[in-house]
Length: 124
Image (cartoon, rainbow, N blue to C red):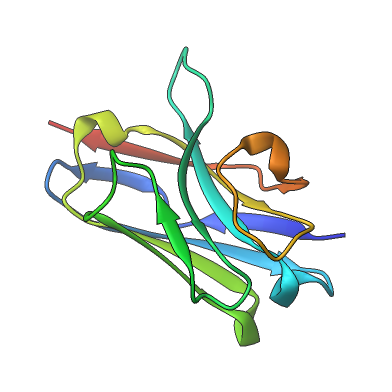
């Protein structure tokens, strides 16, 4: 079992930055691939970024590549999403998710554990 709690969301102007954190509890965090997803109002939840258990492999949606960076510190059981050059279309609830596998994935159905989400709002 893994419990996830996101933090760091808020309101920011276009072009600004935010860093989301996801604190995990549970014995399997260090062996779990982690991901970030987002869901805008009236839309489906979509993949944003993922990171392998070691942090050595990352993957990004094309819409955030070059602007967002996913990282993790296993000693702190925490995964981060650094978001730069934010755009109004980045506005969404952002969710942290953990897999039961060490391999990263893009499909939300591949993730067994989810946080409650944190709101990110980017004003124009």
